[in-house]
Amino acid sequence: MKYRPVCSEWLNTIGNLHILRFEDNRRRQDKSAASSFSKEEREAAWLYSDGEDLSPEFSLEAVDVKGEENPAESRRKVLNFVCAARTRLLNLYGEWHEKLGIEVLLKEQDQNTST
Image 1: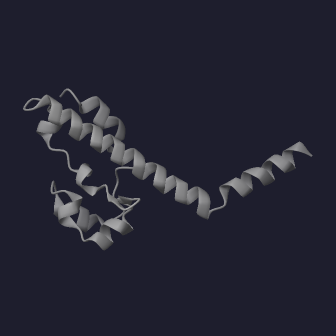
Image 2: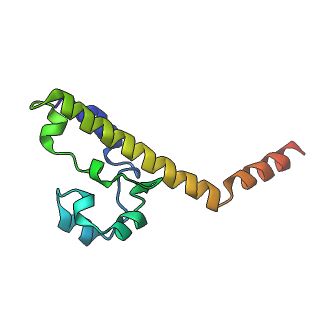
Image 3: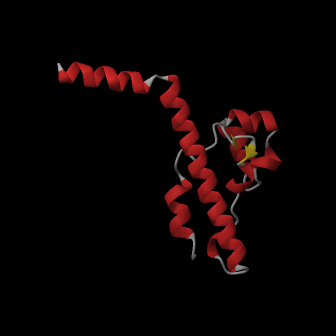
């Protein structure tokens, strides 16, 4: 259970949640997203970042979280998972920020409150 706390911090964030139909996500169970979905489905679910496939990192086995078999490999897999979840989260909110023009709205709000 060595890595459970750090994985738990990211486990249920939007950075880790797949934007896929419930039935499809449930059907794959513990198989990695890379082996379960086509490239197009993974792209639609924001599992790519700058041409890099993040989806293999979203399949952690219990042994990886426990860190019992090979501690160095377990640590690497957990670190990859956390980095992929963080990257995905930043990409999702970055796109949201840009498409909705949040920066413009904030500037307008600042101008309205300063006058």
